[in-house]
Figure 1 (tube, rainbow, N blue to C red):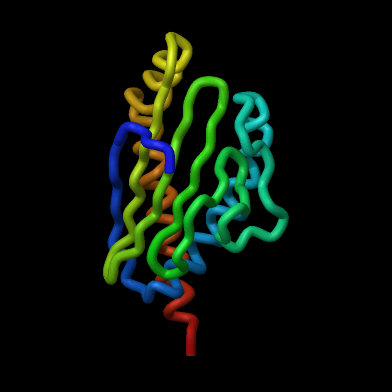
Figure 2: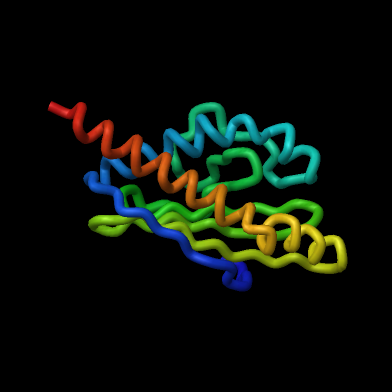
Length: 147
């Protein structure tokens, strides 16, 4: 795994089983990231498109990210790159919470500008926390619906 500088970590309580959280994680990544295909292409992302049936297995993709490591119910690591950055996002499922760790490199002056626009502006934090909350909510709902 390529060494990338640490950016941050965010976490939310899940209130659901690891299986429910894993299912919610895969669902949200597949269905919510699909809309990012156009944006991924604009940035020159690799990969730019998602795997049609995303299940969180190594080699599968969502726009801007490829699964490089997966241990269902425990960890999902996504990695990608585009014109301005190389990055990794790791989801870690603990017994009572879901964490997202971000790492990334932003080389050159354009990378520095991109980092300022995405990371320093707080946009990354807002998007990551929102995604984690959405996953947690979906997992809790699925757990309540389970007989």
